[in-house]
Amino acid sequence: MPRAFTPKVVTANALLEGDVVYLTADDQWTRDLKQAELITDEAVADLRLLEAERRAAEVVGPYLADMVAGDGGPEPTHFREDFRRTGPSNYHHGKQAEA
Image 1 (cartoon, rainbow, N blue to C red):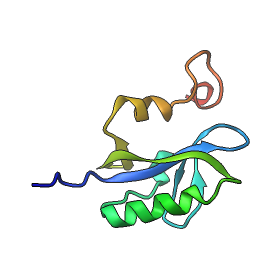
Image 2 (image 1 turned 180 degrees about the vertical axis):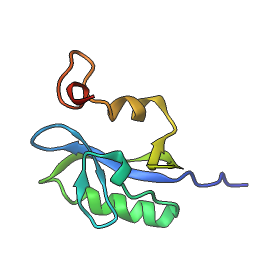
Image 3 (image 1 turned 135 degrees about the vertical axis):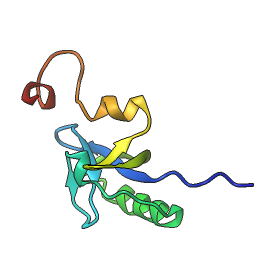
Image 4 (image 1 turned 45 degrees about the vertical axis):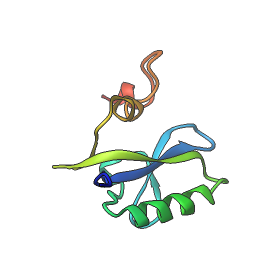
């Protein structure tokens, strides 16, 4: 019996800045996970990933990350994705400096 599909978001790193970005429902890249499109259909997720991979002039390393629906938008199910959204850990800058 096949495993149930876990909802996903398309994530990557911005080509010029290196920031973690997420694909929105209107095909924009956002740095705010709450604005990311939560994809609940496996075929749609695969298609959205293919579309993101063709945008090499904007992002690098796009992939599908497991998420769950939260009160304010998608929430990570894995530590790695929770860690990525907070930014670099070597010192406070970027997103960490804003918190």
